[in-house]
Length: 149
Image (tube, rainbow, N blue to C red; front, top):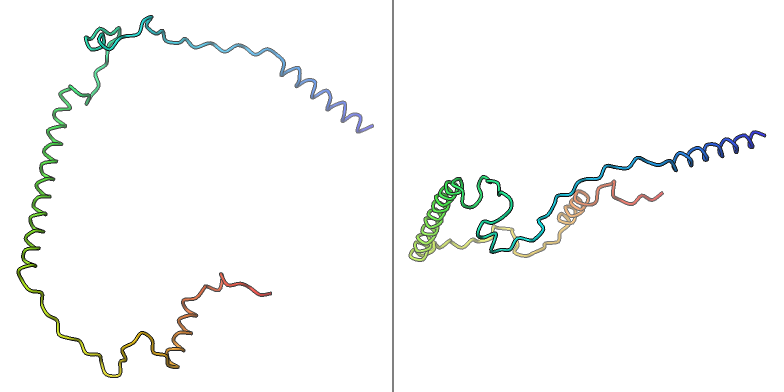
């Protein structure tokens, strides 16, 4: 009996929401689209200035007075940068000339210290101990080691 009541309640709820979903919604207001000129403007007409709309003034656009001020400042900064680069190149050139003219200083030969052997590896019990200690220090951290349980 309880399951029958739950089933009937379920049917009533679904029927209600089904009816509610089928109700007509109010139509959205349509946007007005801008009207385009009836004939396209040719390039020659645009060059002559025969266009049906006004072009707004844009700050910094080509042909404005603001652009000339910015151009002169940019040109001055560019000239300063070129001058600094020329000075740096001249300094490098002078240093290279000085290096070519003066002979390189000769360094005295270095003799090996007493007891020091010339070679890549010297295997002794001391170096083996150091190798084990360094392997333990520089090895994987305990957190990364595999756990055997």
